[in-house]
Length: 448
Image (cartoon, rainbow, N blue to C red; front, side, top):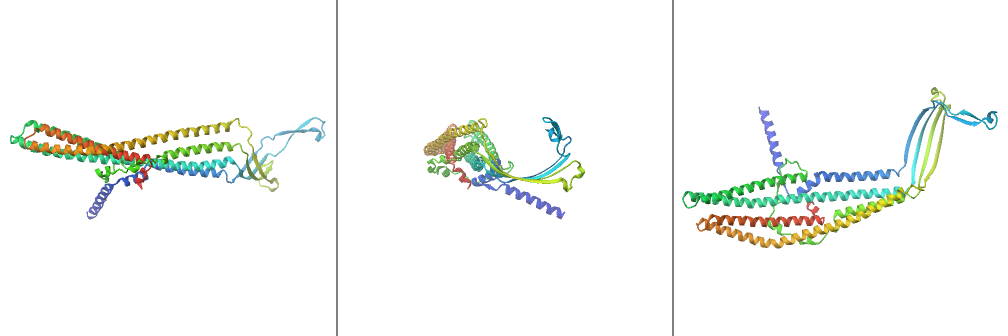
């Protein structure tokens, strides 16, 4: 029993520790770093770099010495006949006699070596493979930027929803207090039943709205965990609280456009470079290529298989040489490839201009939204203050019996709407800030 107690203590202690560990606080920087370390798309993009490095090795290998061993044994079931002049054997001139040359059995073993001496096509192909690796690195950078953008937006949206929930919960507490006081007044004959009913309906509406908001927050948290590639059953506690001051402190230095250095544009530039290298590679195919070769063979020939291994039937020979290949005409095959590469490069140039214009539009839209909402913020803040004051006056008048319940409910509704409008503007400010950082390629710095 004592051992069982120790085991149970260790078990439940471990479970408790795991529960605490699972609820470790998660700030935005940690969330971004976790996503970059675990996201499948980031890992796949990293593997593409490894594949690009293997392409470089593959290209280099064709320029290195190529060596091979070969061995074969042949049974000539029927020797080939060769016509020779019959007069060599005393026959009449102008006639031929079929003779068979060779042995019934032969075997050979050989070593061959070949080294490329010159190939402009190989040089251009090698250069292109290095560029492909750089291309995959840019794709990895873009993937990271997109993951950070998605996680940051979800993180802030959740915190904004929590801010809204706090306001809604405060309104609910106020209505609950008023309902309790009104019920007491009704029991004492100082309030009407309709006043109690109206407050009860308002309480129910706020509770329903709060429940719906809690569901939305839960769904958003699940979406955040998915974007981070975190287990969906994990418990997360977001710690970067969203204060009004943080929303107001928008750095207008972001107004300076930096989208010209966006990774998306770098990728298109690299694609254009790759198509240019592809064109040069096919052009290089018109140049001659040269290679050195050497062979050494050991051969056995005999009529009987039983003579295999006997020294008198074995002989060897060796060769060295230079092989030159001069392309003359390929039916315009390489020319078609050259023209295709040129057209691809032109298409990328058009895509680059289109993407540049799109980034400019995104930058201007986010900046316009940012400035417009900043201009609205002060007015909405004042409107929220006035709505709060109106509600406090209406509440005081209602408690003193000087105002009907409808006046109080209207004031509460106006206050809730003013608070919602203010939080909505704060949300748009933050999201516009994120859009600006993402468009300028600076959002990734949040993970550093």
